[in-house]
Image 1 (tube, one colour):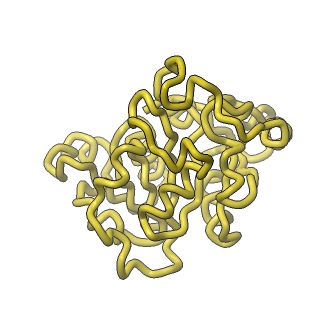
Image 2: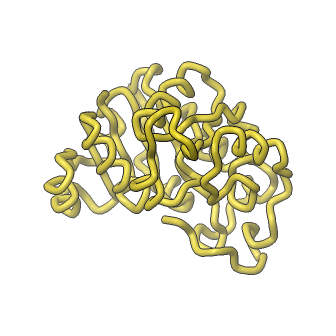
Length: 228
């Protein structure tokens, strides 16, 4: 599969390493330009490209940058990208890092806000796992203790594509509902930052409450450090 990655931080770099090792054709970009990704490209075999090239890299595009950086992406980034290309958002809103984002503070889910900014449907995934666990803790299908990750979105086909990728990476995917239900996996919820199995993920999603904890709201006490 051809996969573009926009963002080369902890999650983006980890996905580049894992996906190239699985044989996928990976292009990766950051805000500083392809030359700054030469070492990662040499290590992984991924192609270092521009943000615009990553958005047009193929079958799946993973956007894995801080929320504050979403409005800084090139205008019309996904204009002309075929509708069947799956766009994945891994982001989390950390107001102490991102500044206050009023729509999110007022109840818009993080990935709905990202989708609105991109002008493109997205699938929310990879946001609740630590990067080193994504790198090291994948297991074969059916293995005891296999970690499961929630996947939310409005397009069943797009979610299936992401769930198949998760399986290749060594994780079970759990359908977490629509994009507007993705608050169930945002920071401060029972599933966030955990290594639960599929049953545990479903239970944690069901137990989630929409109120964002004070540590993950603007003006609240500092939350635990952002994971990427």
